[in-house]
Structure formats: structure tokens, C-alpha cells
Length: 158
Image (tube, rainbow, N blue to C red; front, side):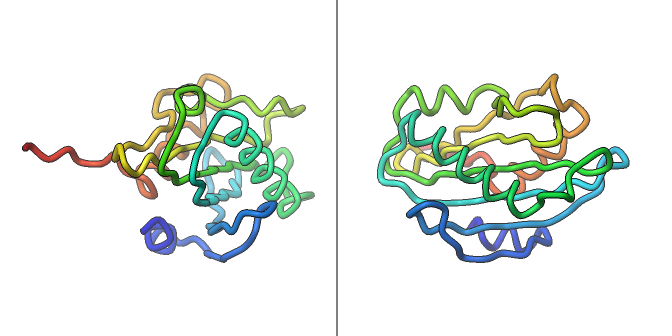
């Protein structure tokens, strides 16, 4: 379903591997605040997600995106990475990590990541949907992409 939403948003979608995990990669560029943004949404399935696995996945996905964009980043371009893990079981530390603006601890400000965990049994999408102070100009773009790719599930009355 996420693949279809990425295609509808204009992404080039490919099946690849990040580490040993098969992933779906959606890529597109979009202008925002006079800057060309390279947007990577990467989706993988994991039986269980804990904080360590989530951080490792984010690092792997960011490294993939940095390798792909390389010299394209700079004063007039930036990188937004949306690492998404779909799981049957997410621990509290992993979901707590998604509830705040994620810090990459990279020099400069040309790359941002915001992970998400989709807890299938709970019917819950865990990601930060608040306002980022660092990278504020791109805050609405990140929210828009997550609303397009992973809208909050609708709770039906019993």
C-alpha cells in the first residue's frame, strides 16, 4: 500500500536491499524554500523493532541516501530521509524514539531523517508529527510526505 502511495506522489520506486533487509525505496525531488530537496522514503518489514534496530536501520538508510545524493547536497539542496519499519511487535523505547524530532548528529544541516514504525497488530503509525525547530522550513514537507505515505489509521466505532 505504501508503494502505491509513493508512486501516486511521483516517486521513482525500486526494490533494493539495505544491509540484509529487502526494502522498497521511493525517491523524488521537490522544491521547497528555494531549495531542491532529495526525498528518500525507505520501507522494510521487521518481525520485531527495538530502539537498537530502529537506530541501525535509520543509519543504514541515511548512508544509502547520502551515497546516492553525494555531491548534489549543498547550499541549494538538501536531503530528507523517511525510514519506515513495518512490524508485528514494537517495543516502547523504539516508539518513544519516533515521538520526537530525530537528530542525525551530522555536521551541517543538509540532511534530516524522521523514522516511523508501523505497528500492524496495534493499527498504529508511530512517527513525529509535531513541529521541528531545527529544519523548520522543511517541517511541513516531512509532515506532508508522512500524511501521504502513512496516514493515521481511522478508528472505527465498535
